[in-house]
Image 1 (tube, helix red, strand yellow):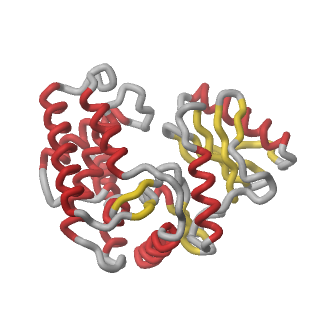
Image 2 (cartoon, one colour):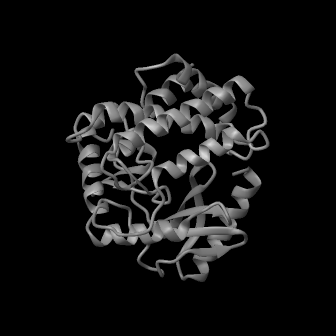
Image 3 (cartoon, helix red, strand yellow):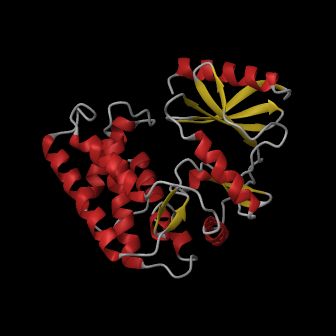
Length: 288
């Protein structure tokens, strides 16, 4: 979000919290991208904020409630208020329990165990949800429409379109078992807490092979996850890189430093396999 929108969102969330009886006088920005993550103090509430029309907050709340009921390692909704989706001043707000992060690096084995437990819980949750291919379709639409990606060169447009279509076909042809997935269980969406790793951000949930989720996590984590189809994982990593590249070229994308990342992700795709994980790509690019 732009700074002016961040300030307006913070004021709106503080006002909302006060109306709900929560002791809040400040909102600390934890993460700012297309959406905003805030820590509300002194009540210690975690707030997720998005402009109206750019969210699937009700779906996220429903998924989180179901997963908490089956004991999955997820961040819970704030118990002091109704588990609801709140509208205020043009923003959609959901309120969650804030967990103080544990110092130190999250161990790969713990990350993998928590993700395996999350997937087991998701197999018990029966909710209508999009398929992973819907995300690919969205990326394909960005690439196919110059009005949505006006700065994407024609040669790159052709390259990305062919990459997305080819990988989608290859993965679907494998016929792998599918289930409800987190959708983006990368390190930014897992909290290292005193209760162990807890996952957040369930608006990205979709159905697909577990390898699609694993394509978002560090390689060391995959080493501890059981029964992975390595060839499918490589295809999914390739697909995720292509989807992220497409999103960075969308006209309305607000990802930080997106002008840098959109060019860099295309370069990674053109370099070819073996396909790096997102954390490796981001570290490599930010260091260059």
